[in-house]
Amino acid sequence: MAEYATAQRAKLLDYFLSHADEVLTVGQVARDLSADGVSVSAVYRNISEMEKKGLLKRLAGEGSHETHYQFTGSDECRSHLHFSCKECGRICHVDDSVTKMLVDSMAANGNFLMDVSKTVLYGVCANCSKTNGREKK
Image: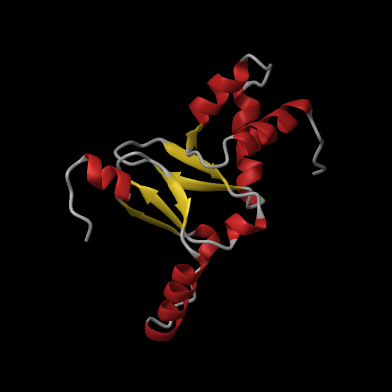
């Protein structure tokens, strides 16, 4: 089936580009874009297509059944592991050297080839650790 460049798809892509460092639910995206004339069904349909193309990463919502998405449309983003804070939900790139070390270690010791474009590490960021009085381990 042919893919058509629609105004709703362009608005959705622009939205994700401007929220690239955020983790968003379909509901959040649909609410934010409703004033721009983007329908909920268009959000669902296009998010599904964007995920298939590797432009979005699907993440399990901590403590809920809601799915979250993060824009990963850039080559830089697809070549990094990501860290997701279970407290604040912030997602960040894992440093290149750390990514390489983990990938190499898994390949050598675990005989496992890691797909960094789909891998997310979960924990608590330093900011939330300080806020919650946790010690860095």
